[in-house]
Image (cartoon, rainbow, N blue to C red):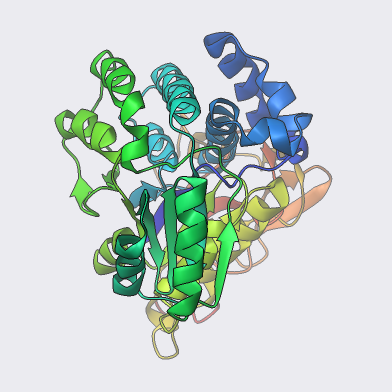
Length: 408
C-alpha cells in the first residue's frame, strides 16, 4: 500500500522548478499565477534564498512546486491509499485527495502565507531543530526557558523542532546542549510557526477557511494536530485552524500510516526531508521511502513500483502472481500496436475474445523503440494514450498471466 506525503515550509530552495520547465505539468505554474496574481515562475526559477525565506513567498512556492510533482505522478497513474502533509503540506494533501479544488487551495495557501507573514512581523520568532533528545526532555528544556519557546514539530525519534523568540531559543539551545542534545540547528523560516506567536493569523485564516468549500476525500488524509485519519470534509476547517498554533505530530502521523498498512511512502515536492524522517521512524522495517522532486526521480519511482509489482515477489510466492506490467524501455511518444486501440484508456471497439500476448509480443512503439512483453498473458488494458509521452520504466500495459507461467 502506498502513501503520498507532502513537504512544508523550509523545504523550498532557489531554482527548485528548473528541472520541470519542459515537463507538461509545469503548465500549472501559469494557471496558478493567474489565480493568485503573482509571478510564480519567478519564485520557482529565479528567486534567491532570502526571497524564498519570506513566509508569504515560501508557502505558495512550495505548494505550487509540490502540485507540479503531484500532477506529474497522477499523469502516469500513480495513486495512493492515504496521504499526509507536513504543516503547509497538509493543504497539498487535501488537494491531492480532492477535498480542495486547485483554485481554492491556491487562494487558501496565499491567504495563509500572508496572514502568517503578518503575524511573524508583529511577533517575530524563528525555529530550530534539536537532534539527539527525546520528546520529554525537549519539553522539559522548554519549560526551563524564561521566555517563549515551545515544541512546534514532533518530527521523528531524536528530532524535534522548537519555535519561539530568538532570545528564548538562544537560552533553550544552551539548556538543550546541557541536557545532551547532539546538535541544535537553525531553520530557514521566517516565524515561530505552530506556536501561540501565530495567534495573530488565526482570525484571518479562519475567515478564509470558512469561505472555502471542502469536498469528500479520496484518499483519506492524516491530520497534523491529532495524527488521526479524517475522511469527513466537515472536520477540516477546524483542523486547519487548530494546526496554525498547535504542534505538528509528524512522527505520530507516520505511525498511523504504518499502522494502516502503508509500505511505500512517496514524498512529492522539493527536498527530501520527509523521506529522511521516515527512515528514523521506521528504520528496521521493509518500508520504502522515495523522494520525488525532479522528473528523473519520477522515472526512478516508476522503476521501483514496476519492480515491486513484476519482479520482486517473495520466494515461494512469485509463481502465484497473475498481475504483470509491461514497462516502457525508453522515453518518447507511445503508439499502440495494431488492434489494441480498444484497450487504451477510454477506448472503444475492444475485442470480445481475450487478446493473448506471447513472450516477445509487440504492444507498441515508443519513439522508434519497440515495446515487447517479457512474459505471456491476457491483455487487460493499455495504460497510456496513443501519442502520450512516456518515460523509461513507465507502465505501458497490464497483463493477467496464467498461474503456471513461471516467468517474472
